[in-house]
Structures are given as C-alpha cells and as structure tokens.
View 1 (cartoon, rainbow, N blue to C red):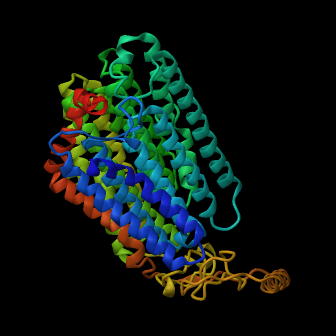
View 2: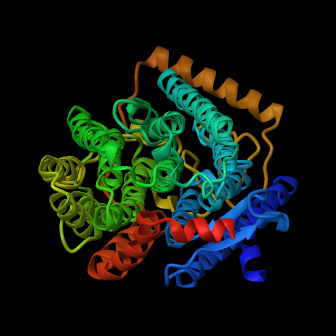
View 3: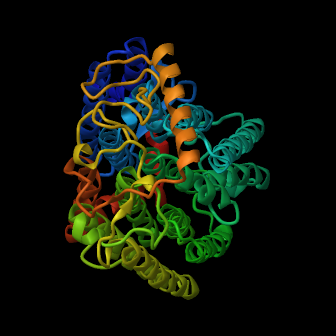
Length: 570
C-alpha cells in the first residue's frame, strides 16, 4: 500500500515545490537548485516504475483510500510508466537548455515548469476522464505563462497572433473535451475509465459522446485537418519552450487517444478505417506542408504533424503488432523531435532566427551542434542505426500484417520526403563555407567570446546589460546569479543615449555593418541537451529490442484491458 500511494507524489511534489519557488522567487540559485533536484528525483522515480510493472501488472492507488468507483484512481501500467520516464527526461533536458540559453532566469520560469510537470504526471496516471481534463488544464495554464515570459524583446504582430491562436485553440479543444466527458457521465453515470470498459462498442450514444472526446484530443494532438495551429504557433515560441511543448503537450493527447480507444471502445474494429484514412492523410499533408517552408523551426513543426500521423496509425492498426509499433514510435518521436528543436534552438540563441541560406558552414564552426542535429534528423527520417529505423520498420510491418497496403506505401513515401527535408536543412545551414555574420542580425549586445558565461541570457553582454546599459530582464538575474533592478535614472539615461545615437545616425548616415568573423559560438552547455538526446536515439536504435519488448508489454495491456479494469475496480 505504501508503494502504491507513492504514485500521488508524482503530482504532489512538483505542485508543492512550485509553491515554494514562488515564495522565494528572488533567490535565483536556490530556485534553480530546487527545480533540478525535483526533476532529477522524478526521472529516477519514473525509471524505477518500469521494472515495477515489467511483468504486465497494473498498480492502482485509490486516492484518500475511498472505495473503488468513488475514489479518484491513480493507475500505473507499462504504458504510463514509459511515458512518465520519457516526459521526465525531456523536461529535465529542456530545463538544462533553458539555463544555458538564459530563459530559466526569467522570473517564475522554474515554478511554471514544475506546474506543467504536475499536470503532465497527473494526466498520465489518472484513471478518471474528468480528472484527466483537470490535469490537462493544470498543464496548459502555466504553459500560457511560459509562452509570455520567455518572449524576448517587444512582441511582434506574428508572435502575438501565434500565442492567441495557441491559447484559443486549446481553450476550444478543452471545452469540447469537457462537453464529451459530461455527455458520457450523463449517459453512463460514471467517468471512471475502467467502469466504461466497452461502453462505446455496446451503446451508439456513448460511442458518439466518446467520439467527441477523441475529436477534442485530436485537436490537441494536431491531427489533420485540425493541425494548422501547431504549424503557426510553435515556430513563434522561444526555443526551450518549443522543445518542451513538442515532447509533452501533443503527446499527452496521443496517450489519451490510445487509452480511450483501447478501453472505452474496446478496440472496436468498425471505426478503425476512419483512423487509417485520417492518420495517413496527416502523415502526407504534414510532410508536404514542410516543403514550402524556409525557416528551420517551421519545417520541423510541419514534420511534427506528419510524425503524429505515424504514431496514431498504431491505434488504427489495433492489434499487438500495431500497438507495439505505435507506442515505440511515440517514445522515439518525443526524444528525436525535442532533440531537433533544441539543436535549432541553440543556433537561434547564438546567431538569431535565420531562414535557410542566411547562414552556412556550421558543420565546420559548430561541430557539436552539427552532430546533434544530424543524428536526430537521420533518426526522424528512419535511417539506421537510429531508433527511427526500428520505429518505422515496425510500423510498416504492422500495416502490411493488417492488410493496410496503402497506409504502408504512404509511410514509406513520407519517409523519403522527410529525409529530403532534413537534407534541405542540413545543406542550407551546415554545409558550405562558414560565412561572416552581420552583427546587426545577432542577438543584441551578444559578445560571442562570452556566449557560455553562466547566467547571461540571450541578448545581453558580459555585464548582463543590453545595448543601452539597462538590465534587459527588467529586474532579472545578472551574470553572477544575483538580482538586479533597473532604476528610473538608468532608464532615463539609456533613453537619452539612444535618442542621441539615433540623431547622430540620422545626421551622419547609416554606419557600415560590423561583420563578425566565423567562429565557434555554441558552447558545450548549450549543445549538451541536444547531444544527450542524440545519444539516446542512437542507443534506442542499437538496443531497440529492449524498448520493443517493453512497448509490447504496454500494447498487451491495451489490446486486452481486462487486467487494467480488474485492478482499478478491485
């Protein structure tokens, strides 16, 4: 009983730690220390849950020890254990990147990350539809805050529009999800997932209500044709936030789609053809959308849509092989896509946002980030020996085994187009001769010689000041990790200086640009997160059999959810 009750700590500890960090927000080093202690401890605990359920068992804790059917159940099986492990790894990795990039020094960044973590963990562990909705909102609300506080400089019109779109679409999807859950409760008198086992396959009205839940989850997962919000919103977020969201938000929705269809629909074969059509279209339209993009993060965002189609095809192939391949693909994709966003994010932090062709030769000047990007890109395209090869081969074999020849053909064709897109980014940024960079296009005030100094966020020089001599964080953290406050006097001085400079420029004409010579600017601290995930995808490719076996155990619990239902209902 003690071990089972420990499941609640995955939610309680991040929530309590977040509250503590808000109270001591001005003590930056303490805040970051607590953040990483919690994230490292969570990763260790999540890894420990995997052998706990490796035999296919299901661990259940009825919160507050109320009777089954009345209490809120926290349920751990192999699927949720694997998801906990990978989401914990990605949150920790993205937090490390945020420190290196300077984003983590923004006020309230650490507590907001912990609130997101609590919501993610709760959504993965709860066995109740309504509480799944609650935990999704716990995850989303601090996410909106992260989007706002990590925006550097004055917000652009496109950035504001992207944020508004992201928030509006998620609020709409959450409303539809809540309506679907309410309809299920009105029809059945319960929202306990185990008690709803097979209800949608036996009652058409319940099937319609559950389909509404799946539709809401499909919006959150960015499934075609409700995918446009992701392609527009993700490229406008900060690098660390984009990477973290790519590994958490859409994947929680995908996890729920697997769970709902396996238990509530009991894998009803009558509706699987809809999934095959929609998810194949998602694969194809996503990769074609990337063709017309010229910015690396925009290309990656469209490829994210495409890869979501691959993952969800495992549900449409509902069977031991299909579910195993889909779960493996889900875990692989979370790691690889975050790695790609972190690699491109590191380039943006040091060189500023670029379109393809505006920067070249980084394979020579930035070998660490070049290796990290290349490994993750090849894995995304399905090239051996990386995990993407095992994931795509398994899914194609499962599609052929299920007789879905067209879906298998689409998967192969999209893989080729994905490879071409990754080579497009590689040739556009990493190949060629290194070029000198116009200093006006670099993050303002950045001194490349001090780009790895701890505590110096993007856009500040070695003293932690912007070009006008004012703390660019507006009372954030200086290079030594302490706190600073921009006074009215310094602000007035900076304004007068800027005005005088502008007047002089107008009289004397524009200055010639200062060209920064080619050279290494992305240090180990900024490249390490992407490199770490590249190593993970290589390890999962070389040792793919281990993860395939674990994914097979998770798939068995979904294909036959009897054990899950019996464990929850007692």
